[in-house]
Image 1 (cartoon, rainbow, N blue to C red):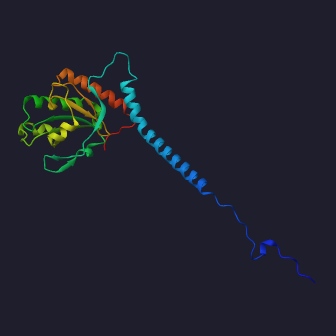
Image 2 (image 1 turned 180 degrees about the vertical axis):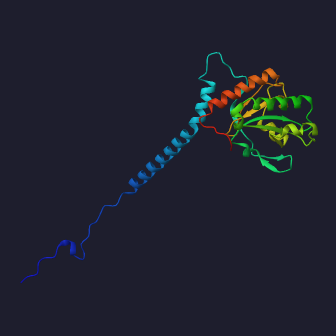
Image 3 (image 1 turned 180 degrees about the horizontal axis):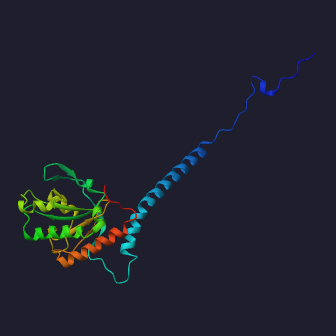
Length: 230
């Protein structure tokens, strides 16, 4: 009696040989994957930036005819410089660490006299007038020298972030309007750390109200992506 023939699957040398991809096909596939990865990254960045762009577009473009902002828009915006300032207690503070809040900034020497004190007063009043949106803003006073601060104004600075900054670093970042000095203005920085607006020099109480309205409009426009706190 003859043995039944073995199936091909049990043959010890049985195998299937598959074609290998050519090097050119492999390179093409890798290039395609790289391009798709870059496209996805760009799409993610655009999605993240969209709320910020939309809020500024709403404020500066989609607005009632005839309405004008009181402050000067800074184009292009300028990021907080990567420098270390000094708090009044001597601690070092990196300026980029202030990101996450809207910053209303004033600049002067430490020997703050009448004009400087008026600027600080209006700065505080503008922010206090924001009501519930006050929590989204910080009051910042940047001192450009080592002069002592008058003791009489210290109690009024409890809510302020007071920092001493190298004047050269400030001059490379902030810029006054032509014919004015750095200390003549208030400056607005958005939560991403970008200086984006400068208000007219030597504000009067009436001009301070217009400044507040500008800030209120920006806060409303940014409400979809900006929250209080860092």
